[in-house]
Length: 199
Image (tube, rainbow, N blue to C red; front, side, top):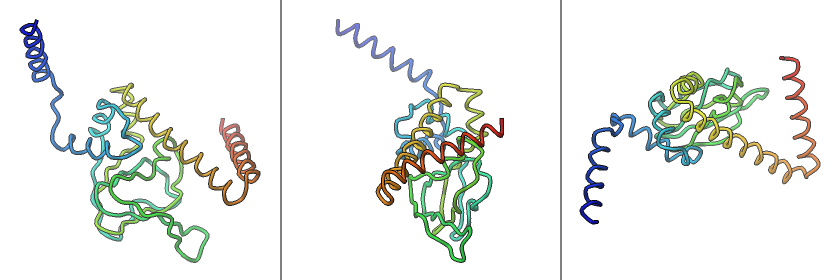
């Protein structure tokens, strides 16, 4: 019995050696970065490799903007190294700091799921290396690997839904349950009305 088991193990190793996905080091490195991002941590290797193969690696100097508030959003960014701050300066005489982000954090996720304008400006605080993953990349994966694309889309939907629920909880903490629910209902109604007028 142990001879048969050893033979099967050897055949398995040979099979993996011959048919293992040939992946360049850059793609493997990007997979490791994506896997460290909480929103992507539960994705299968198939979905991670599909994302990594289409991701765009960019480097920005300190003080550069990745995008501006009000710009059409095309996709999300994952920070490999460095720090980014999200700010708002719309309808104000001063810039308002919203949040600072560093390695293994993502931002701009909402625009991967639809044609939404940016809600903030993303500006570098240090030299930054990011991975960009955009709607055309997701559409490309949908054509080539629908199962991987479905996984990525579901991961992003969970991420955005969790933010949505947390926003309602924060409104409830600050303004009370009635205001939170009224805000939620009003937002849902507005969205419905806008979708009805578009269609």
